[in-house]
Length: 69
Image (cartoon, rainbow, N blue to C red; front, side, top):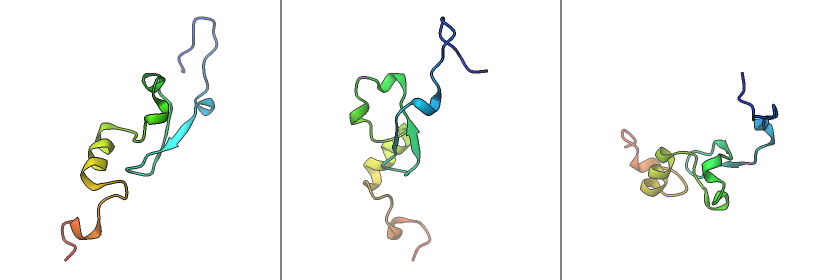
């Protein structure tokens, strides 16, 4: 059951804005903790943020993958 506000009205998840993660390419939706800086949010998780720092915005290169000799 979805959580509702005290007045009985809840926000439908389909009504929230969404973006594509620059690291994994998956869509992610607005979260309340991102309300102040939604425009600056580029990744969906801490894991993707670390991957973006490590690999860059285009993802891992084929030569950096193990077993791709």
